Length: 286
Ligand code: YH5
Image (cartoon, rainbow, N blue to C red):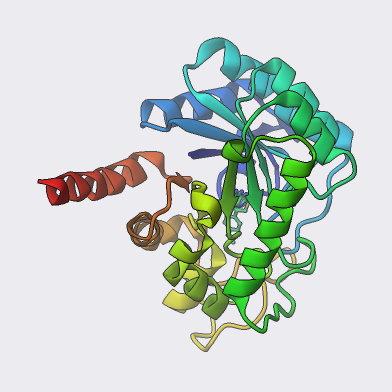
């Protein structure tokens, strides 16, 4: 799953898709096409920044960013379109325009989202998050992170099924970096197989995330990093573009533990890494 982030504050690649403060549809589409050429089977289109400390966007802004791009990709590229949204209106409109998957970091928890998703008949990725994006990294706290994520996902599966969404249409995601310390993230990754509830496919998003910067200790002070990125300053733990090698390591570790879908910025490199995982899996069958 290749990431097409359309938010101007995304320090990973979103900013590059902007011209004169407005999303450049041509640039965004060119980026999407490149990710397809690099081997993405799914493109994840997001218009709300959910990185730690991010400010909320208006519905109108999100619609303006996401919907034209969904329409254009559906018309021109042979790829599954995932829409990274929590909004009922965006879920409905994106489905009408050709989206094939709903990816919600709030697991359809917002008003009307459950009903909107059910009405589309599309598959849904349910992700765990503790808290809200603006404050979630302040003080993540769990008695048992794996048990809490599992209980949350169990509850959201029940809510989806209750709203008429087919069980077999659900995907699960532990939500790496969403209200989690490095230790929480590593424990979730290590025990990923325990999260494949009811045998549902697991999606993981680890690409370029802050846990990498923290583990690699590329912060300016060289000391053990604390908290989230300073407001307006460079992200803690080195530039996200320096996180490719570590992102690939995490993708391989996740697939080894059963992840079915890897959400990634660097599609070509990730496809190569996962091709080696696939070759090893084939070998093991003989
Ligand atoms: C995810 O894990 N993540 S948006 C912070 C970064 C780098 C990247 C500090 N949407 C997920 O990609 N959807 C996002 O560096 C997602 N799973 C699913 N299903 C955050 C993101 C990012 C944040």
